[in-house]
Image 1 (cartoon, rainbow, N blue to C red):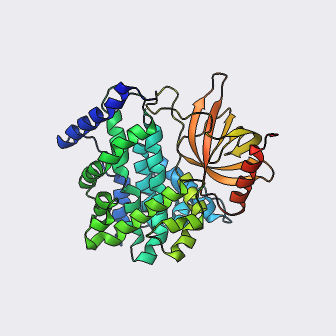
Image 2: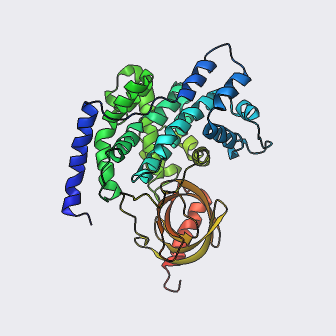
Length: 395
């Protein structure tokens, strides 16, 4: 329960952030220099592979991301690549520029800090938004470049708000995630507009930042891009609202046509694969989190005993509920990040799951809670069967 003192804290933080924004005291990272250079090169007729690789090679983190992308499941069946130039040729210049912008944005989103898990949640959603917007853009007459940048950066103001709270240099109270998100919801558009001005972002992206919650109010010149971004946000909200997932549930997204629903329903593995291109990290144990921990128990959960495997790690499941499962192991997984998992029950269930809680145990190791993401088809049926079995008194 949040104390009365803690409940009064958010408005105080909010007013302080507004004052700093008005006084131009909010720190906004510069537009990614490498992304800017790559954009200039790709728009020029005078460049070669050596020029491109020279720019990319200046950022070891970007090099690693490009190599991971070139060797990802998207290019399954091709030979593994260990050389940057070959990786650039495989993914193409357009995607290279996109990766450079996303990699740079991820530096701010993924840094250690008391609100790291919330920044990571926004970043994960932004990566998926960008990927999904690119897939739907051609059907709506929107360029894939505009769709990607608008999808990636339309909510970056939320990351800027959270980073600005951390930069205040005061000890933050421990609040539920909903308490911090309430501040973000009220301020992220204002912070995003400042970021757009500082970065001199293209008009389509500026409109997406300003109007993604109210697309009907957007000027006609950018309406198609803004409506695309708003629709993608609605789709991702559906995927995050397990168990009401699957293509059938997408009918609730009013801006999505019937044929687009079919496309989106097939894109979940691609979205998760794209997110996995970018490395993330578990919150440092030395950093005090300002986000109230999620309970290790699951509402409506029942005891369960089976193995869970993910990223070459093996865990032990101990509870299953209507919309999540709890497990423990020696290794902790990043909170608010999607991971491929296999539940080794009968029959086994392969799924993508969002890790919504990860807490250290007194005896060592970690206890985690994960929520299936975009589960559909036979695996969703098997999940329902698992729930029925764990409800039996004999289990």
